[in-house]
Amino acid sequence: MAVADCPTPAEGSSVACLELTQPRALTAPKGNSPRSAQDIVPIPDWCLDAADGTPRAIRTEVCQLSGGTYSTWKTVNGKKTLTGEANLNEINYSYSDTSIESWVHQIEVSAYKGWGDALKAKVSGKATSNGACTTGNSDFPEKPITIGSWAQGDSLFTTTAKAPGAVGNCTTTWNLTFTNGAYNPTVITFSMDDIRCDNATLGSTKVGCVVAWYPSAVQYSKSRNPALASHVERAQASGLPGGSFAAPLRRTTNEAIANDNRNKACGDAPSTPGKTCDEYPLASTYQGLSSGGERRTFEGCAFDLPQQTGPVGVSVCMIDERDNNAQGGLQSQFYKRERVLDHDPFRVEVVS
Image (cartoon, rainbow, N blue to C red):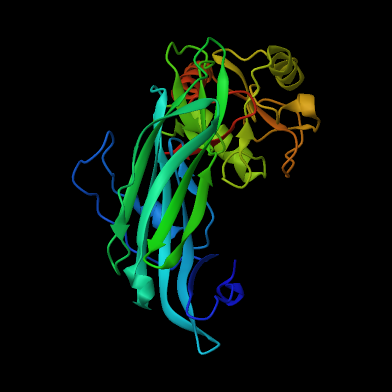
């Protein structure tokens, strides 16, 4: 409900309204002393860049900023009169762990500007959940709306996706209630559905939770695996995906697809002592040749193929066998560590 649409109260009565707005640039609130099952933790700096309201994340953490305007009105002598207004920032922040079955949804709200009766309000919260999870200990004690002071709450959630092979998503919700004397209570709701938990990660015996849509990066080192890094760097420079957030790779766990990708890319690889065929994008992705496209290569790669550009197809190159073997270990460790499941996005970074 927009402030302008706030209902007109009867003569001598009052009404309070709350609308969502864009957040304002802000500095991080500081954590309070321990007071619940979970401590309020500091908000990471990268979260505070989300002033447009777009979620920001890393593989185990996600946050979203929003704004609000809380207003109070009275009708006096037949005239609807604004008696107070508070401009608010809200921070939703969830953090998980790749080897723990629970996560926390933390919420914080503060006024950065205000006047009148609006600053007499108090806010409290209640957490709920829906999906493959249960709601555990939660705490959001009632606190006055004060300029520059943060009202904070946190709640623990636990996945029910614990059976072998299970994958579960959960929506966690905070309902914040603003109370203010004779003014009507107002409620605003914030939900997050970014955390996914699983017991389906190959090689892992533990349940863990991640932000599934965030594309973590596996790193290939120029110093440790120069041939591998050189090929991938040139392949990405030619337009093939995987090096950016905008165009990540997506893992396939379908062995038939992976084998088809390998055969189409490297089935006719030349016999070169001490070298084996490397393909990029990786065979364990949906961007391999099973999805279409043509092969390309580069000078010194021992393939008689064109040096094409563009985002479709694969690059092939005969590289040092040790580098190629190292790539397999790097990928399997990465997939396990980051809980990268079928269709999950990921990036490939070439580092020094």
